[in-house]
Image (cartoon, rainbow, N blue to C red; front, side, top):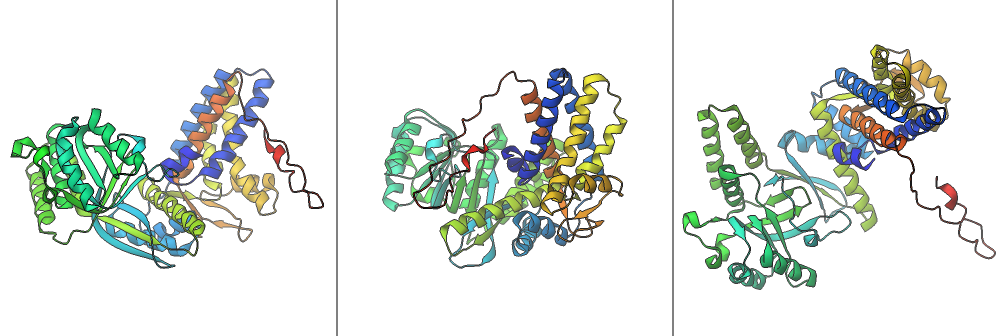
Amino acid sequence: AKKSDDVAGDGTSTATVLAQAMVKEGLRNVAAGANPMALKRGIEKAVEAVSARLLEQAKEIETKEQIASTASISAADEEIGGLIAEAMDKVGKEGVITVEDSNTMGLELEMTEGMRFDKGYISAYFVTDTERMEAVLDDAYVLVANSKIGSIKDLVPLLEKVMQSGKPLLIIAEDIEGEALATLVVNKIKGTFKSVAVKAPGFGDRRKAMLTDIAILTGGQVISEEVGLKLENATLDLLGRARKVVVTKDETTIVEDAEDRSQIEGRIAQIKAEIEKSDSDYDREKLQERLAKLAGGVAVIKAGAATEVELKERKHRIEDAVRNAKAAVEEGIVAGGGVALIQAAKALEELALEGDEATGANIVRVATEAPLKQIAINAGLEGGVVAEKVRGLEAGYGLNAASGEYGDLLAAGIIDPVKVTRSALQNAASIAALFLTTEAVIADKPEKAAAAMPGGDDMGGMGGMGF
């Protein structure tokens, strides 16, 4: 479920229901004497066939309204869906969309300069938000260095100047190691000085170019001996500035308040000229990526709420909906409500499998019905009857659980990104195959029910849910 959420922003419930169905059906067959390894091969071949059919069934998202509909379903909020569609319209499908706290109760969209690159913090000790495992710096200085930083004596003069300013520091360098890294970590843990160290993205000449992009974006300079700048002599005016920096273990997002866009526009024009001159497809692709990072900007969705708990939940829903909408744009959409899976399972009829491999494929066929059956049960209907009826309908038609009627789910806006459905199926199958080929599983011991309070209602009987 976590893997599906990370990849596509949704599909946690689907992945869990699918995994449970596969494990249950698989264990029944293993107990009856089936070969677990043959079952595993059958499951894998079946999942590959169903995934391919899902991609064939997918409809491309063409309108802002379709993006809004997809995001609205994930966030369970039409206003959030509309705002995400507007944000994606402005920054493009590869653009960066971040979520921040708002001082007001509502939602608002703000466009800023900024970029994201695929390098995270060097040490987890830099994390400031342990729940989300993120390092967040507000109104930070940005040091961009085209060298390895290992000696603390090179860094101390600059660190002292930044500390006096009272602002945090983001360091982007070829590498930060040894006593320099240790000093930054110790000061962060003690609360003396807030900083984050990140390795520079790219390699060789491309790294130099990307560091220059970052420096121009933040209004700083690359500290490099090639241009006569040494780290020990660096001053604050050589550093860039960022309104906000968010660093995870995998990526860094810089949100910038650029008052003077002239340098950024000049850099964009330079990259466009390089793209026109380049005769290498690979170089052109990498230049396009750099251009998108510089020109695309960052869309900031500001969310407010009455309480801290509500705000946290709302931000989480928005972030999931953003990933969901991007997944929909990337691979297209299919009918929601568990319908796409059950209809894509028809691809299994074309597989020429025998013995226990065929049994493994049948496990997947049975599991593909599970999400639809569960939705039907939740709506107070008979799951088996609904599944049988939907199987006979044309592609995209199924049960609208909200109204209890059958119809065109795509037209009704009941849709799922195919990436969400596909990821849920693949991750569920991966867990099920591992479970079936494992001799023993160690589970958490179910906690005993708490004793009832004297004279009160016995509410402690929920502890025996372990399995």
